[in-house]
Length: 159
Image (cartoon, rainbow, N blue to C red; front, top):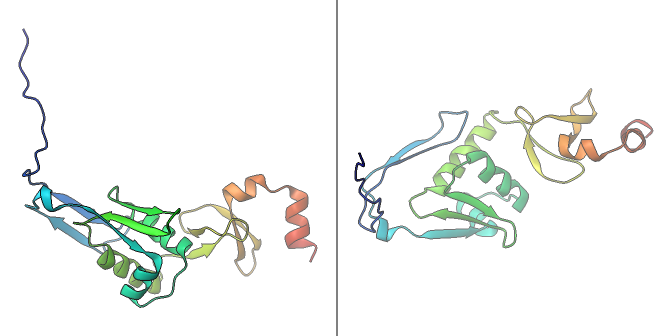
């Protein structure tokens, strides 16, 4: 017996619901209902515009890390243009403001890898420290895996 299944369609008038939150925190929870799909478009914000909107002075790699940490499929960082791209129903500036407040409150321990320059939350990302006593000179595991013992010795111990 074959049961007919209606074809799925996503018309422009379809309403939808989505939840957005910053993983691992209860900082921000938004429920968006009854958004008209024909009004939804992708928006982008340059790093300088994001800095201006939030009155901060963060480099592009830090914004890339913030976007990665927020972890929403509708939010991405475009490294070729150094811009933050998101769907118009995503309140990016509000999410980023809450993330920055959480960082100020100590929810994240953000360190820059001394080798590749990317940012990591060392509470969630494994890595090694060149100066473990003072927890300085963080090296992420991808970079550490490519570093030889001799390179590590010459860079951090021999000095």
